[in-house]
Amino acid sequence: MSGERVLITGVNGFIGSHMAQYLLERQFTVYGMGRSRHSRIQHPQFFYTPCDLSDPKQIFSWMAQNDI
Image (tube, rainbow, N blue to C red; front, side, top):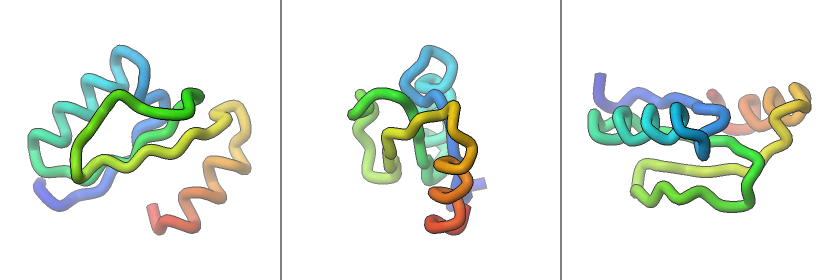
């Protein structure tokens, strides 16, 4: 399923970071959100946005702006 786009919340956590790496290896474009200002993941198909995940309005607003 290369070329697909996915959003992973909590991408800096154990499960989220491993899921991102798994999908990136399979040619997915990964959008990650988390509480930290930066992510450790470095990949040309990875895009990170710091976000307050307890605020659904912030998440849905970002999704609408990025067509996810």
